[in-house]
Length: 302
Image 1: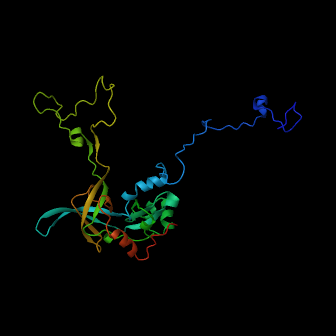
Image 2: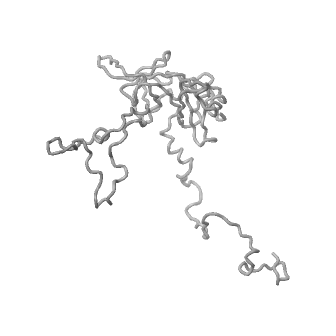
Image 3: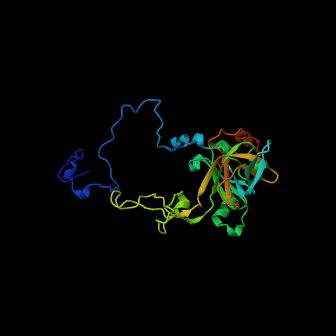
């Protein structure tokens, strides 16, 4: 940089002697530290532990609780009863699978994780948005009433797009986790919603028998109501998971699955079924993947 008063081009003046308009200042947003980070003498060499703040570390932590294969969708038809061989009667829930089909894949390379997008039922194209119609048309699948995503452990759990998942996807005797939106009960009081015991039932209580009582302190707690205080409000209508539900019977021809006991949700609701994470993975988890005719479950380009 040439500067008036200096004949030699090899000599550069000090920055504070150069006029401000000649300096090449680049405005950068944010705060930049002027001190370099100190090097840790222990952070070098081989066999260092994996950083726990990376995506790979997060997937590794969830590996043992992520199912090996995709789940399925069913419609709750109601409850009935069955009998044990010794004559004992037990309640059970009937689910029906309606045209459950693989719609798309989520891969680690494109989305950061492996998942299978599953749809069920049928919907008229006039009631589907154009972006979603293009999604179905790209994968050559008819429009679905419901669309749910199930995470899988790795690419071996990716079923081929267009594959039909029948009732035999689950075997009799295995355990599943059933997820559904619970029955909505509207606005409920504290006794019904949270199990409060209420006030005294004697004649000394006036018109507050079912009242929840005090909602907070006057002085010691800051004269406020603490966040998360159990109060009257809207009850139900949120997702509930019933874990370790046993599959009692499977009817592949009619698409029926019979589960032991009750599961969340009213009749006609959508139920998401997947292998139970608190039980050993069933042997069919890998056998069925290999037995699927024409299943391109190792493809990661879709």
